[in-house]
Length: 307
Image 1: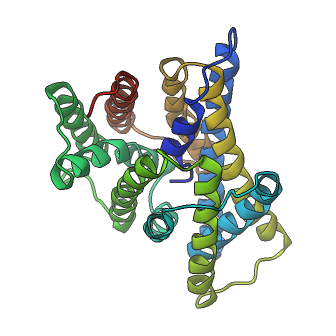
Image 2: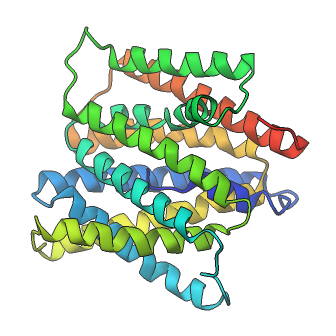
């Protein structure tokens, strides 16, 4: 939930990858995955330490705005847009997604949250098909089915206890799927920087107003951790975009799968949680289905054909 992946891809693919830089692109993607998972672990740690997740959302967005400000000042007219309403709607929906995700991650393991997060590209395709009439061919339907099968394997509803955390992460993933559709449309004319700035300008006051109702003044350690969430998210976004500048999507996107490895390792060492084999298998299937849909979409876009 912490990266505007479609915006990053759209802007990055506008420039051809540099020659002999595939390994650098792969390193950027792996580092991005590590940063996102480290940020999720910090979110979980802060919530368990008494910081309301909505307060973490506020700090994450505010710190991101501070980090992006120097870049924005160097780009004249970066906030000029013909799609202000769409930016506002995207910001509100993403605020709901982020808040739900931050609250949900308190109640479940990082691996389970990661697995459910992988369903967003699949849900975005389903929403586009059902509500916007986009045609979806047989191979992508099979990929969608495989993704949902993976979710059932990872969660095993009816065979293990599901709690509010699973529901919140699933809801966050559904909202994020809607955000991906907004990003897809905005990316046709808006840069990733413009989108990120508008997101921060919407998300920061919304989260701040909600956080004020449950505010807990952080101590110095907690404050540093709150800033760390913003730094990891913003740096992770940057590295994600750079990965596609340095190498082809087919070379670097599979490295996003390392989120599953990082979340397993961090979950074990930080929270003493060891994921079982079925959870890992389900997450792997979900990722493979989502990655196929993303790669297929990029291929069709290059060919200039409708999805």
